[in-house]
Each structure stands twice: as C-alpha cells, then as structure tokens.
View 1 (cartoon, helix red, strand yellow):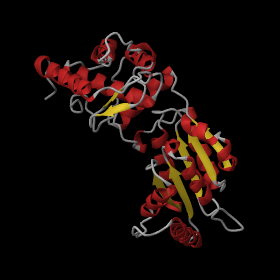
View 2: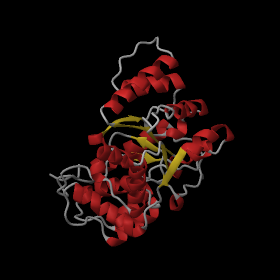
View 3: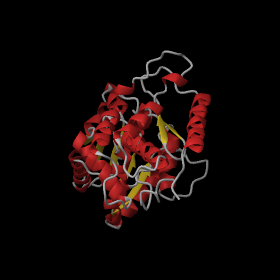
Length: 331
C-alpha cells in the first residue's frame, strides 16, 4: 500500500528469504565465506547455528545460489519427521519417483545411485537441512549415515545443518557424539549493531528502488533498540512504520511513527490475563511471529502461552478500522 507513495518497485521488508535483499554484515559475510570454503574443501559436515530471525535461511539461499552452477543441490526444511519420511523428502527433492513401499535400505540405495551419477559428471552434491533443531536424534543419526557415502578420494555429499540454538543442545548429547565429531566447521550469526541496522535498512530500500533514506536518524536508533539488531524484527518494525507513515502522508518515517508502532505491538492489553507485563523494552519484537500474509506480528517469547486467535483477530480489526476511519492512502 505504500510502494507508490515512497517510489518503491517492490516490498523492501518482506518475509521471504530473498537473496537479493541479503545484507552481508561482517558476521554474515564471515559465515558465508566459511561455509563456502568448507564445501569447496570437501569437509563433509558443516553447521550454521543462530537465534531465530538472524537471516540463516536467506544466507543459505545465497550459498546455494553461488554453488548451483557447479553442484547438485538439495534444500530440506521438513524436519518434523521420522527417518523414513526424511529420506522420502530428500529423494522427492531430487526428482526421484517413489511409491509407498520403499524401505530405508531401498531409499539409501536410490540416494547412492544419485550421488554416483553426480560424481561421474564431476559435480558436487550439497544437502542443506534447515530448521535442523527439530530433527529427532534418530533422524540426525540418519543424516550422519548419509556422509558415509564416499569414494577413497572424496566425500560424495556435503551436508550443511542449519538451526536454532536447540540444535547445539542436541549435538552436545553423548548419543550424538559421532555426528558432532564430524562437523568440521561451525558458523554463527550475531545481532546487528546500531550502525549495521542503519546500513541494513538502507540496503533493503535501495534494492527495492529507493535512493534516498526514508527513516530519520532518531527513528533508526529506536528501531535498533526495539529490534535488538535481529533482522526479522527490523523487517516487521519497518514494514509497519512505513504503512503508518504512508497513511499519515509523511514523506519520511519519524521517531514518533516508530514509537506508535511500538505501542501498537504492546500486547499486554490484549491478553486474557490483565496486568501481564508486555516486556516491550526487552524483546517485544523477538521472533515467533503470527503470519498474516502481509507481515508478521511477533509474540512476546517470554509469555507462558501463545496469543489466542481471537485476540489476534481483534487486534487486526482494530488496526484496520482505525486506518479506514482516520487516514487516507496514497493515490
């Protein structure tokens, strides 16, 4: 709704992991270079572990985009599964025809044939498993066994496990010692500094077609504080700030608009338990969003309960009615 008003070609703060919008902070650049080097050196197992919303999936898409011309790649994100389902997802990703009758042994043989075919064509095979913290220990053991496919000279498959800190907890278990020992490179991502937050916002605006900055310095400082430097949180705040500023016909986003967005995200008044602290100053925008199709409404992660559906509906109805009654959008 604000694209024409701010002369943007596309949504700069979307929720999809589009590599075109990837901002490579020093930490993100180091993680990308480390994974690229590990795969190029044939190290077998790599891991990327970071908190939610740090841009892991976008970084992985960028990695695969760089490697795809010279490698066969597979990207899996269906991680709430058993070992047999995991192998089915993997083979389907590779375009293999499956019936409901194959057992694990048969599927391993099919996978091995795919690997040998790629090896004969002198192409590397790269498997990326996203949201790997959801994998049961038995499935992680299945993933480990995939690395046993090799020739005397090289590994036939390079595997990248990506996940939240819970993945590190699982890898630290004694039962997964063999998998942990095979991970030769471990990368992580850190929150953006206030200066990097400003560069991140301007980078995404330029990618979307905006040359001049849209957010004032004070607004950026508040976004950095509210978001705690987490890219997903920055996207959520900026999207809503641009929506509100557009409805108010403001050519730039001032700190008062960001402050109003922060107030709108205070869920304390919507909770079924009055008086529950909102925690706005300490992570109210932290990830675990409710996907609305347009943006994401982050839920306070320290809450013992998830936001009730009726509360979420009431919130959006309130925002929609307020905009319809009091504001006008761009022509």
